[in-house]
Amino acid sequence: MKRKNRNRKAFTLVELLVVVLIITMLAAFVTPKLFTGIGRTKAELTRAKMAIIENALARFYIDCGRYPDDSEGLEVLIIPPADMEEGKWNGPYLKQSDLVDLWENPYIYVAEGEVNPGTFDLVSLGQDGVEGGEDDNADIVNE
Image (cartoon, rainbow, N blue to C red; front, side, top):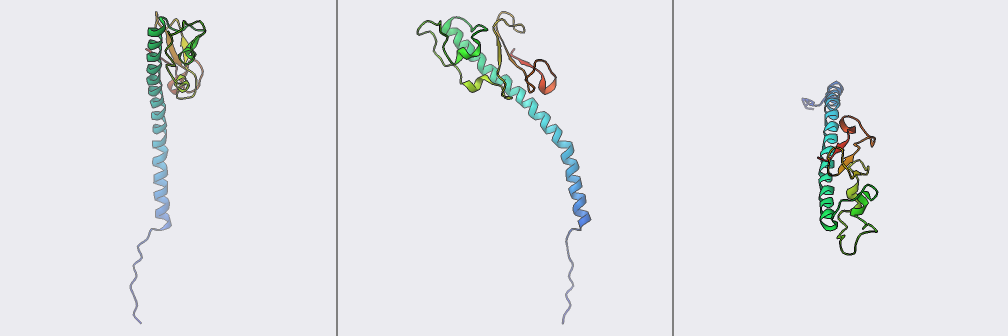
């Protein structure tokens, strides 16, 4: 019988454990940076949705000759106000889903703006849904 020289080429258990450990360490460093980027992206997209609402408010102003007041809020962009003259309101100007930010919190409409004097403010309360905050929890106001 002939004896075959078999060279086994395989990884040992120790080598596999070292590779798994290195991959785990890399994931531990990279993952938090990815989630920080997601929060920043949501804030930027929230600003973009605010621009859509501002556009709808401008169309409402052109059609109706006024901006909504605080009691009407942004709902007037979807449902015509009861006291509106026939034929002025040409909506709906938005979909209901446009009135919530990316954290599923409703936008806040302030008719007499504090940040934007002489016009209106649109506010998103950020990830936490509470006034104030920092980073992902910071309030976002239209400019």
